[in-house]
Image (tube, rainbow, N blue to C red; front, side, top):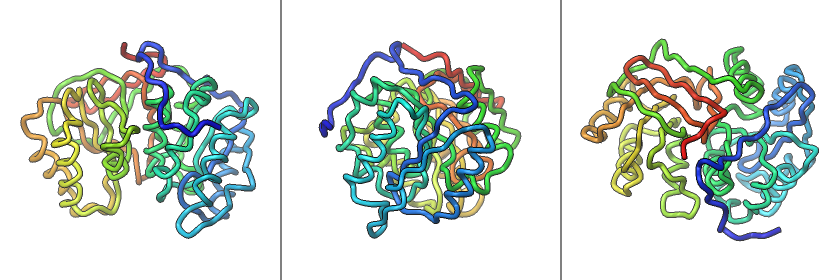
Length: 313
C-alpha cells in the first residue's frame, strides 16, 4: 500500500458524500489510537446491533503496545483494510486516547477516496477526520466512539442514527447555549478536539479553516492551556478567514465560564459569530456532526443547521 503523505485536494464542489447507511449495513471497528476495555467494546457493539447494523470486529483491534492498540503499521493496516473493503459500509473507531497522528503518513488517501464511506469518532480521532476529510475531499463524522456508545444517552444514539442514516438536514438548537458574538455564517463545518487539532498545525494534515465554520471541544485542560492553544491557532494564522466558531463541551477545563472568558478575550476583534455550549465532545449528549457538509450558524438564536447533501464550492 502506498505510504505517501500526499493526497487529494479537490474542489469542494466535488465533495465525496458517503452513502447513507440502511438497516443491515456493516460497520467495521478500527482501533487507530489507544487500547480499550473489551467489555466496553462489547457493550457498544450491542448498541450498534440493536440499531439494526451488522458489526465486524477484527481480531487486531485487541492488540496492545504500551499506550497504543498495536504498532503503527498494525493500526494503519487494520483501518485501511476496513476502509478499502467493499463489504464494509462504515468504519467506527473503538477509542480515542492517543495514536492517530502517528499513522497519518501510512494511509493511502487516493485509495480511500475511491471508496468513500463514513468514518466516525471523536477526541484523538480528530486527526483522522481531518486528514481523511481533507485529503480525500470526503465527509467524515464527528460522533461517538464504540466504547462510549456503551453508556450513551438516547439523544446521543438518535443523533448518531440520524446523521448516518437520514439525508434530511439536521438542525441543532441549543437550549442552554451561550452567544459570545451574535451573527450568522455559512460554510463547511470542520474541527474537533482542540488539542489534537493544534498538534496538526505545521503538518501536511492540518485542514483548511478559511471560509469554514470551526467546531472545537476538549477535556481535562486547564484554562491557561485552552488559552495557549487558541492563541496558537490565532498567531499561526489558522483563524484568518474563518466564518464562524462553535464551542462544544469543555469538561474538566476549569470553573464554569472559564473557557468562555478565555475565548471571548482572546478572539475579541476577529469578527466572526461565536456560539458556545454545543452538546458534542467529551460529554453526553454527544451529538454527531457531519464534517465537510455545508452548515449555517445563527449564533444569536443558538442554531446550527447542517445539510449533508450540500457543500460550498
